[in-house]
Image 1: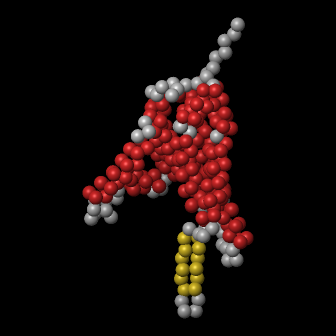
Image 2 (image 1 turned 45 degrees about the vertical axis):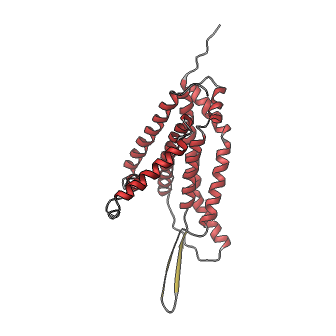
Image 3 (image 1 turned 135 degrees about the horizontal axis):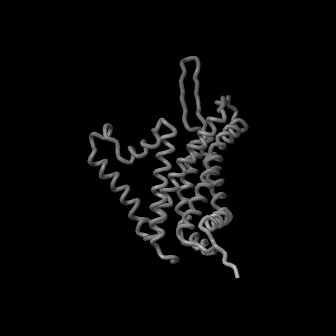
Length: 252
């Protein structure tokens, strides 16, 4: 008679690979939302016009900014969706607990965000090709090297990671009580409205807290510090979600 020891690492690994297959629809929706972003990007993301009596110059900028925003929205919704009861019930195919379930969810979200980051960056090339094929205009392309490409993918991944962490935390709160579906947006909007009212007349000198938080990450000029900020913030949200899930019933 032999006993089989099931370690946490093996359980997380098995759940992770299972979720990659079970959540294949998430990648299908990623493709769909990025295609939509590409279509919207064909009109350009900015325009500069100049000229005189003899000539007129109109410059349009094309980039994957809209695709990136759509990808972050997808990451947020995916993180919330994976906390729902139907997805949690998949975990009971294995010998599992809340910790292993959460860790495998986080690994899945990290993998999905990596895929989304790479395809979002590469969509910029797709936009350029489509513009060249279907629109008869002079097209100038700024060539980027491998270093810029890696930094771009890394930056989008880090933004996606923190968005996933926030989404996972919010999704966890919703699983505790459906009231959070109303409480969270109402509280956020109420706080913004209240602060805007209190700062009325000095809003240019005293930015809203939401804007300050946004700038705390986006305006960071040192990439290494940006990485540290994102990793610490994401870890805090993920740990908070894991802590809440560990206090929930084993199965609802």
